[in-house]
Length: 133
Image 1 (cartoon, rainbow, N blue to C red):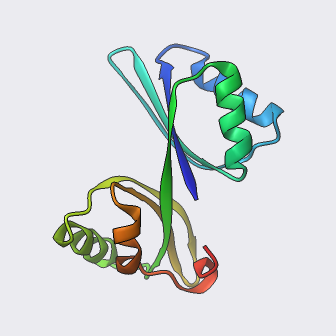
Image 2: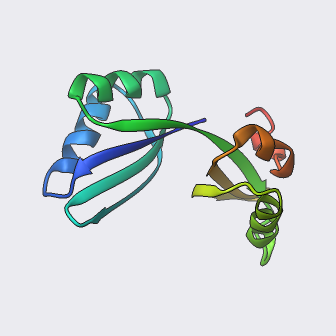
């Protein structure tokens, strides 16, 4: 999966414009986190069509970064995220963002952006519906 970190002005209509552009291109947003601080807006999103998203952002002249995001399926019980966070920390891998994508009978589906995706892969539990990622 790919995460896009998009920089926007923190003012009315910025998020509306971004989401309208993506919708107009047929790009579906699978996960999103957004916040504003000191006049700047940051939107982190995962979409179903990364190449189309990049094209939309380029055409709109929006500043963004692309990052590899890893998927995990955690047991939906206390301590599972703590175990994953500790394993990554012990390997000196920084979690840059984490998204809850959904809760399933198999567990809690999350997406994790880290500073070293290849090193993190063996530490991240992937089972069930996510095994194909």
